[in-house]
Length: 54
Length: 321
Image 1 (tube, rainbow over the protein chains, first blue to last red):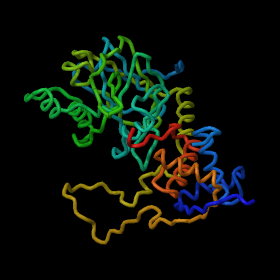
Image 2: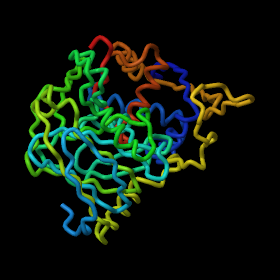
Image 3: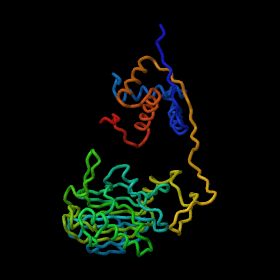
Image 4: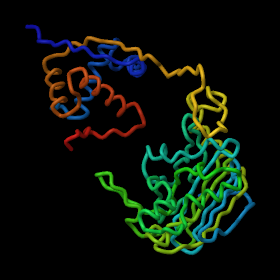
């Protein structure tokens, strides 16, 4: 059974895009901006609240 | 401690309540010594070749309210040049970047001195007057041997502790550019803990550049310059210093803001139910007013925490705290 998903629209400024581009180039967080955004979000949750999340 | 410093080329005892503006050239060391025990010293610093570039205490505050050994005296943006490095500072010395500088009107307002009480604004103004600068050119001080304090509510206490400076304590500043350095004996020391209700003399000395200090200067400059946005006068759109005091708009002047209008890029992020639950929790914890705000804030907070030199606390405080 397919997991439920939710689409979130998020906007970034051209300056924030420079930083996302840095992360995208690193390659660790995904090849697309969408993947980078989602993976960094998960990293933030893990780093801030531990494995149990927020 | 730097052993191989150059020959002393200047020395002077500054008596209460005076100061002195002294040129200190790149690679030279300015030493300020407590001659007779605890004494707060106010310090100003200008680019010797362009007085509009001066120490920016405000920007030094961004990394802490007490500059210490190893820290840099930075100039005002958009230049943001390293002007001096704090090479030596004794443990007994606490410094202060919050207290600005005492001035006569403040001492009149707070303590009722309708006669003019000695104060750092007037002392420094007298010092820089020797170089044709006006009282308006005095800037906020880097306060040496000033044991101020503050609390989480934002209250500032300039006199919360007694001065713990010791006779013979000294601070060494290494000039990373040619500067006009202005140490002054704090003028409010006789009416506050700032200098334990007394005034004491200080000694200032300048040591010529040595091979060692030249190398150190080079190393500091290599580390702290080279940013594209550390601008020079030639980068300014408006370069000339006004001579008229009255402000009037320049006809046909066009404002050229950076990255204006700001471009925006939009993404659709597909989240799992678990991701979305976490996003909602973030909002409950005060990080973001809606889904987009929370997601963007989480991403940018992570970046700031992990890819910049800024310190971000693990938990962002909410207004309620």
